[in-house]
Amino acid sequence: MNALWTVALAWLALQALVPPAARAEALEIQTGQWEITTQVSQPRRTVVESHCLPERNLLHLVHGPDAIEDDPCRPTGPARVSRQAWAIVLHCDDGSQVHARFSAKTPQTLAGTVVRVGGKRALLQKLELRGRWLQAGCGPQRTQRNQRTPVPKKA
Image (cartoon, rainbow, N blue to C red):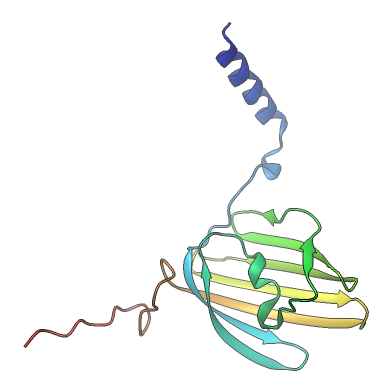
């Protein structure tokens, strides 16, 4: 048996040992421009922002609008991902932990909760996020429900 067949058979045998839940899946959301509405618990306020999601990784949404550059948080492990859910835990330099969970009921909608607890200030901060997909790509936004701005006719 040649070496290529041996490697292929070994790879297939290893794949059979890995449970389906442990195999990498991608969150089934549209990539591109999203409108994210964030409700912050402390102080109570709502923020609406446009975000570019060029891939299906939601890590940069975890901090919400109050990202603190001098207080970085790092993932404790890889995100747990399925076709309709994404979750991650982060440990922050101040001793706090961030638990983030997102779900996608459709490829154009996203909902999530980010909770940060503990740390030097014994804080509890909760963010509720809702997202709706606006357009493919991350260029200029289209107006009124993803409609292209009409091009004026030449006179």
